[in-house]
Image 1 (cartoon, rainbow, N blue to C red):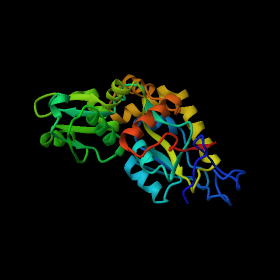
Image 2 (image 1 turned 60 degrees about the horizontal axis):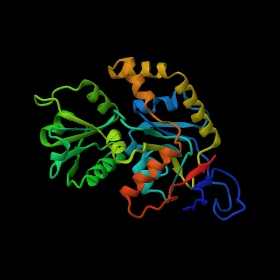
Image 3 (image 1 turned 90 degrees about the vertical axis):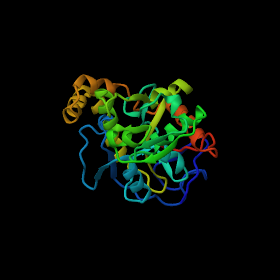
Image 4 (image 1 turned 180 degrees about the vertical axis):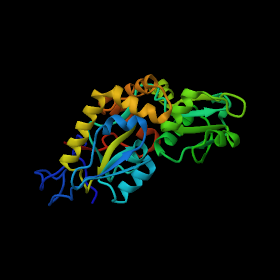
Length: 297
């Protein structure tokens, strides 16, 4: 069932009937430990050293796949792209202190384009199929500049995307690797617009790309949340080790990956929530402050 949040946007994680009508009704929801893990470098510090415990199951994939699994009841908790969190705010509740956010450049959500930004008006852009948030953010940025640009979903392949389109939106490790390489495509190095930087230039707010969320009817177990918090503490405490491990799989230097990871905001602070609200208002005209809900744990 859909559960209203209390006035502060918090929802109890567990328990029997709370004293006021704003939380769960009678009975405790099923508690589960089916965790979705996004297989991107920037998420690695959040699950560093995390291993399944008895009864826990981990599933790895891209955001669109894991978000669909969560909504389909196959997962109890996963990293949810901000666009999906906003779109399904009647069902989803986020952890209060986890985020993937940046204040300025993100380095892994990038529009590569053959013409200057202003000249893309009326053009066509190939967009990633891996995340809804990056696509919604790009649309919001074009709308803010009064630009009409057609989007077409395409598999991640910069050469193929730029061969038939004016721009190509890449995310995650593919975007990071291309941004570092800055290689010629069809004889010329494409221009690159970092969407985190573009958002900050227009709003002076952080951009929250994702949060950890669960279905309101299936709260995450306290064990699962505690394990995630411990993993984040380990990961951020050994960030150089995380960077070294990730760099080895990406063909990048340790220094590049360490700087990349150190740039992220992983704790969903008040400014990150403000940025999330600002994004929600841009992508959904029905959004009202306080609509987004967070577990009280």
